[in-house]
Length: 442
Image 1 (cartoon, rainbow, N blue to C red):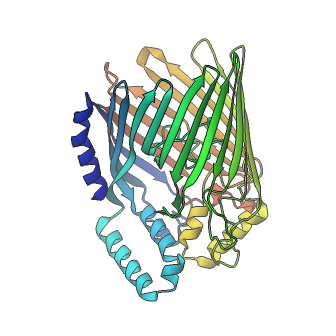
Image 2 (tube, helix red, strand yellow; image 1 turned 90 degrees about the vertical axis):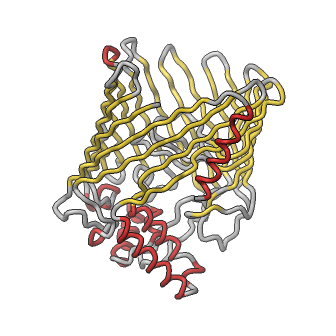
């Protein structure tokens, strides 16, 4: 309710500053899940506690408002959609596993009962509102912008992963159109020279499933541009680090990235060094996860090419220093087996497909169909160390001349090529899904 009230107040205030552009998107979709031999039962979904079904329906609508003048701008982005109860249970389990809930049985019991009642009444989904963007910008001088509020800090060159992106949450490499929730912060950016740009910011980070305003995070990025070369240098101060920390989603970090255009062939790379891992280590005995308090390095290298026909191809290799080796993946599976139906939200958060192992290779091919204003996209991700293959082909068809109504067809497949390695596909409750949606742009 607070999010909706804030959005309405800002909407009423926007006309005071000038002309407003209103746009958005409505997206109803149907998901067809194909169960495996054990139905939807898996270590992450014992007894199908997530309520997975063969056919699931969801819809969401986005409202976007933007206003720009010579000296200021405003950006609002609200999403109203069906929030899966599975995610609600995940978040609640994380709360129940927190120290203050563990130390107070009455709080834990009360939350458990409330969530059970809510899940029973709501079915598979809850309707929720989420404020994805809410920022105002001031341009006090040429080539200088100051932005405050919820905004995106996405940066880098990779199609699937962006190690140089220190502020935004990790993106989903199998869904390039996934909407990233903004981060609350204050940003100052400018272009003092034609060959250099800078961005410095202060952030209010998140801790687990809740916002934490106890300390300010600070970061910066410098971009240098030359004839055929662009490179970035960035850093993040993640606040005070203590050995007693249970998690750390914003460790100190330094990163660099470059892009080189070689006669139409784009070569790019990114690398980051963090003071410690953002992903905890699993405890095979089923206890709380353990903070990995060691320096971590991750890197990405790739190349892309735009053909004269419009065809775009890309290949990437991602070394994920925060991923698990085989022993750690086996420890994770052992911890889930120990927890059973009382699965801990702490371990839900550790399961992140395409970031779970150490090594990943991505192949992407985009084929435009200009005559019908449509496109086809083939995306394959293979992990040589955990032996998992992700296949996500997509087709987007324009259904009218205005381009306001399109249909999107997806297939998502996860294939475990070696079950002994305990990879993402082996753990996932759904291995194959088809998705059909309509997108109406207004």
